[in-house]
Length: 387
Image: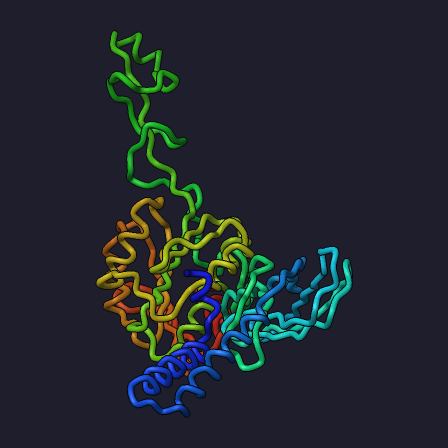
């Protein structure tokens, strides 16, 4: 019964219900008019079933060109339908979901091996991952009582990247000669020699200091001070509590993607965290693809910003710099809660995105704070950081 039930539309169920009601009333009250009406409605449903008879053999190819665009750029789609069967196919309708919309194409009768090409435009006015497909051929009657849909192609994704700007090199002044600096943390394997200690089982024998061991008659191994390596973490919450509007959130995404893009180009180790998880940051393109999947208002079940950062960064290396971005509702107190998650060797930068605000560079409680009103404000503000 499952496939049979699925082909009946809302209008079909309404007609069937009216037919049954009319026949019941005619049986109870003996009204011949209702008998006639009931059988006419049932006959309409039976007649509609004949429109579902038949098999189609289509080959459908969906292409999007290009597969990645920036917000506002033009993106076109192409659907090629081929009759892969041995017989002539009757005209039919093909539906193609594109994002939240639906494109409909009326296909003519097609001979074996004949192709039909259809073009469509993809809306790119918002950052998103737009899915085109799967394509469905539709069989049904003119009254819309019955409808049979057959899927023919897998969906294809179009990435609409946020707008970004280029920043100054060297992570825009975020990392100031951190690479190679020595910290106070002691480790068993590094470059900066610290001291000798007695050997314990499990130590790497490559670090045994044989001359001292021979002199005192006890195995001694080298200890080292850990060498700091540049590591940046960018925190971008998606919870609506940190933003005055969705447009403000989109501006914050653009700012985060701009900073992350420059850090990746500089070759500095980078992680970007949000409620949905870690972004892919192997390349600039993969980072921008990840930014497309962010959903405004998603809080991931975290009670606050500190819980988000603690959970998402607990398996990451200790950062040298943490950049926290948010909207007008992100205050210094929120950024300080992020500060408490990391050690004293970590530098912190807060970026508050407030639509229409004057760009500002300041310091609150020892933390650098940027206020960004437009995306174009970001490069000069970061040049100020580097100076």
